[in-house]
Amino acid sequence: MNYYKIRYSFILSIFLFVSCGSNNEIAQGPAPIEEESNSSSGSMTIGTERPTETTETIRVDGDAEYIDWLDFETAMDRNEDEKRFIFIDMYTEWCGWCKKMDASTFKDKNVINYLDQNFYAVKFNPETTDAVAYKEVLYEKKVLGKKSYNELAINLLSSKMVFPSFVILNKKGIKRGVLTGYHASSQLINALKRYVE
Image (cartoon, rainbow, N blue to C red):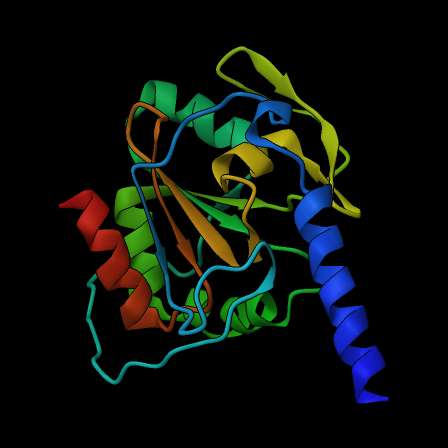
């Protein structure tokens, strides 16, 4: 019986690898400068990342009460008037760690104030069926493996559909990096400081 489980797992792995396609099939978009993962198991193609914990607390003063989540196009429009970094939370409805971050990290006063002072915060579901405009290109739904994702999400995540993932764009709207996996409040602030400072 173990033989069949191993064989099935191997065949499934090959199928996922082959069905993801090549980079030539993916719409062109901004290239990453660096990618970082909090997963001790390395990068995954499709899935969710395990959390790592930190005990250090970072305080950020401010009076924001909640994160003003925007859609992607609204954030880009606001960036035309007042330049800021853009923080994109790539989440899915089925991602447990995404929900945990919504209930903890994104409710933390320090995270709320840090994002409010430095970023336009975007919630983006890569599984959306809605088209999204970015840099005069309309990105639509595209099949990647057995799932469909928005082409913009595929490009911004470099086809590594791991959730939660966070894309950071600079003040010109150009991708600077990707953070993957669950981040506790201080971990997230520390990671974002590298892009802001």
